Amino acid sequence: MHTGDEGYFDEDGYVVITGRIKDLIIRGGENITPLEIEERLFQYAAITQASVFGIPSERYGEEVAAFFELAEGYAKSTDEAIRDWVRQTLARFKAPVRIWWLGDTQTGCPSEWPKTANGKLRKIDIRAIGTRKCLSWIRNFCLRGTNPFRHRTGTGRSIGNRERARTFIGTSFSYVL
Image 1 (tube, one colour):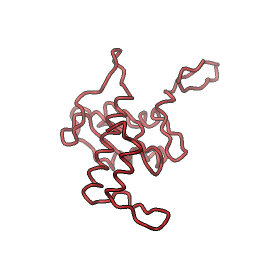
Image 2: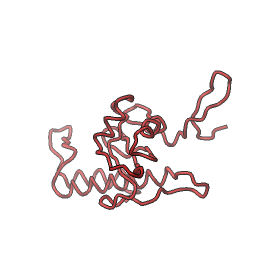
Image 3: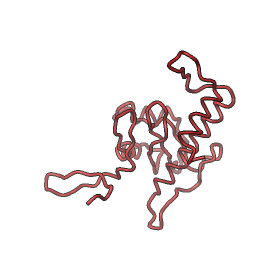
Image 4: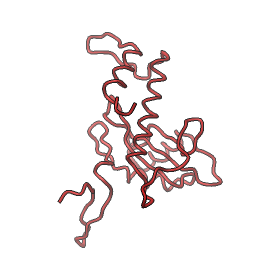
């Protein structure tokens, strides 16, 4: 029977569920479990709730991204402080590349978590929001003339920013736009 759950058998023979296979982030051939990163982030004082997911990356396939809910009475931490916190105990590639805070009006993040009727987080909706935010960031930078990729083709010809944006956004991830 295939359920889509990820887990292992403990020493007593019981199955321990650790997450969903669909939630697995594959970054450059490395399988990253969001639960491992979320457990680390829950130890950070300024974060009450975290959701880690994969966003598209042309170089690695997927990158680690996260949405956070700010704990009451705390100021928002910098992205770099959170990355450093994760890297203290986890591998460098497991630190979130993109970070968004729930209810942040400057970035247009939603004010509430998307949830199911049972009250569980809808990871698929959270991933879609993060992917849209990532792609709009790429579109804005590429079409303005700043190249966040610094990419060259195999022939040595540089790809222009507009051409790069059309290639990256138009073909690979047009379902999100």
